[in-house]
Length: 257
Image 1: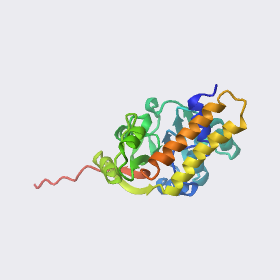
Image 2: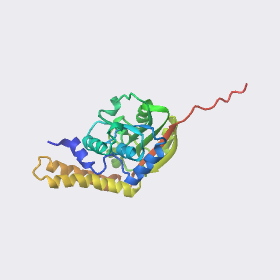
Image 3: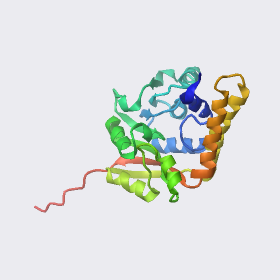
Image 4: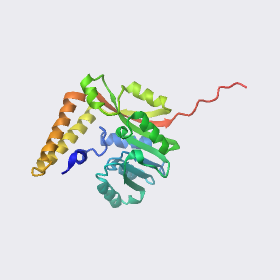
């Protein structure tokens, strides 16, 4: 049996990172976040590692480590890295990000669409801080409410420990935790639609291509259920923002001698 976790991995084939962002947006964000050709990157919740592979291709000398509990797609991405001569600059670890301990501080920590693994926004910020070099950057992606949802939609999207706020409140929470945003990007509705259609469509295609598989019916059911909860629920309500953050320095002393 494939099981629900594997079905989710199949559904994310077209979007390995769980975020509604176009390829051009991803490239733009990485270009903004990587400041030096010898930067060391750490992606907490890296999906299959595609973002890190893109970063290595575009920035000679950059090294990268990715951590994800699934590990789905690691073999493919590591194979691509070897083919491109980048294997010595990329490590991928199948592990719970909450349990991962880095051996080297990162110049750039990425956590995009993975706050659920830590239980919410603020625990994610705290975890990233532990892995980050003193003058490092954090590329953080998380959901927020574009508009106030009705009670049913909110309950559906906030069924776990993670809760969302509107964008001003989300940014204010980040700032209050000791971070300064130096850039930001909010996903467009078109990016959300592309992501969701790929998610549901890839899973449906897999089921239709494998009619004899024991999980054929389950895959179609999961695809249809997700599509209904999106189109009839959170579409147009749930937003996604990526913030490029630096630590806020302590205030200068105002003591008068």
